[in-house]
Amino acid sequence: MMADANRRLLSKDLMTARDLIDTWALRLEAEQTQVSTASLDQPITQVSCRLVHTIGTLHLYELTLPLGTSIAHDTPLSLIPPNDIGTTEGLVLSGQDNVILVQTFDHIGQSCADVTVVPDRAGLLATSAKQLRGMLAQPDSYRLGPADRLAPLLEAARAGEPPGAGTGSSILSTLWSDDFLMRRQRLATLAIELIRANKRLLVVCPDHQQADTLIGTIARAMKAAGLTYKTWVTRYEMALAQQADGVGIQELGFEAQMHQFYAKSRTDKAALRGKYERFRELTPVLAYKAQKQKDLDEVRLLEWRLMTQLTDFQNKIKDVNATLVEYESLPLFRRLSLQAVGKNVSSLHQYLELYESQCAELKGELDVATTRINELVPEAAVPKDMRPEFDELKEDIVHLGGTKKIREILAAADDTNRQAFIQNRRLVVTTASRVLSDPLFSRVRFDVLIADEAPWIGPAPLLGAAGLVRERIVLSGDIGDIATAGLWAFHAAPRNSFTPLA
Image 1 (spheres, rainbow, N blue to C red):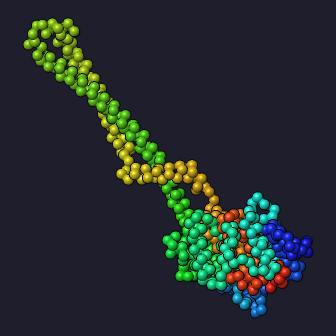
Image 2 (tube, rainbow, N blue to C red):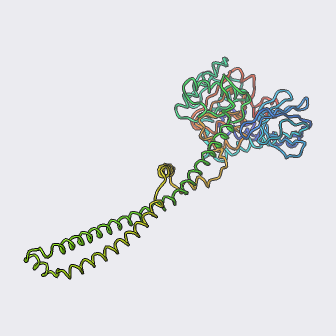
């Protein structure tokens, strides 16, 4: 199969992205088999490490390997401390001679000696080949149109022909120049233009040091343009440097941003839980107060009715007494008219007794009503600050979708969703080999790919990154480095087993 792939790549037929992906998947699988068969992933003992710094849930350790050994960047590895605290997984971010910087999710102490390191080069190759195979097996999930534009360029490099120095098409454009600072500045300007056009950018570099310097250049340009770069830009791995171009890039790390976001989210969730519990506490209290106020209003209405009746009877008693006092002096016609309606002296006394008994009953009922009112007034009284507090809480809860929605929010798990978080980043900076080997990127899509120092990125990771974009690819670098690096020439002997993933 490998021989067939070689013949296809060396033929004069026009290559497509699918052909190239298939060819490089075969080559990575062959290299993975070679590494596994030759047992090249041997444990490295007597390794010392020290903690450089910690951001969020990530830790950066400096490992000193025995002289003469090294591990390429983006290689996964396992760390086995001597104190049996368990194996820790890590990722090599950079290395110089026998000193490497490793990113880990677990803390293994401030310093540690006699650590055993087990590199997983075979795992890196297998994961990368699997990602390429997935691109071929799921054509509906990947748009390989932009990646197809890379085929002629890679073919020209294989044939030893220099690629065009122009800007190319609207899908594939190149920025070839031997002026490094000018290239970086133009890339920063282009990134700002694309962000303002609401495009999602994947920016890949050959290694993490260059990724750090590039993200610093872009962040500084965005700051000068009045854009809040912390909102849009993320560095997928831990930054190796504290600053780049005068910009603090540690806070632009993906894990640091996600840790900060979810820490704030948990704080907001705790505050929301407090509001919801206070709302639930006040709701029955105010409902009870409202019911007591309703009872109080009814008793006060009854009191008003009793007072009205009592006043009527008191007025009648007053009229009867006045009539009895004046009865003998009333004109005859007036007395005869009173007698005609049954009101004579004896009957008026009977009316008087009746009215007085009814007044006594009403006064008794008034006393009961007054007592009940005195009981209900404190029960119905709402503290001065309770009603405004409840109204504010109710407004917030209605704004958030109601109590049912809040219960769903509070019941939701606190697990971090890395895919959802990275999809909210407008510009992601990482290395091309990380894009090819990290499963997270297989589920994320971008509009534009910017490959910085593209000649130093192997075809396999370059194609893997190109398969994730929908619209446009931009290649930047020194055109003379294509021949110097020799990564795009398939027939070139690899400098090490990781040349395709550079």
